Length: 108
Image 1 (spheres, helix red, strand yellow):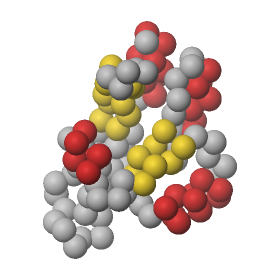
Image 2: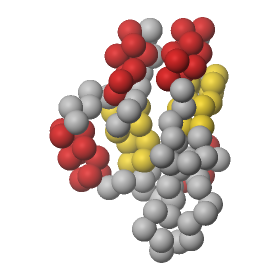
Image 3: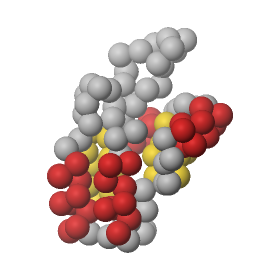
Image 4: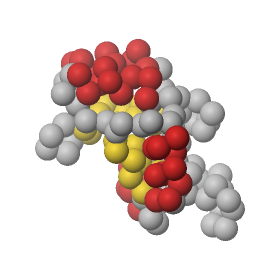
């Protein structure tokens, strides 16, 4: 998980890092342990949060193995739950430029 590369820098600014995915809770536990991820990983049971954020990749139909997959993205949310910045990519292989994320986080 590439977010681990900058999570310490973001958390040093007083911002919590959380990842949201439709992967199973069991898989999230395994990944967190195997990759020594120190931030919270959340399971989006029915992709309702992915849909609410408007980041679900609609290229996949229900029943497809990656149905519900979100576009890779990072949201910066203030303590009141207001999204202050959104970074998203169309291809699941890509990630938002971390220098842009860090710059935006520093401005919060």
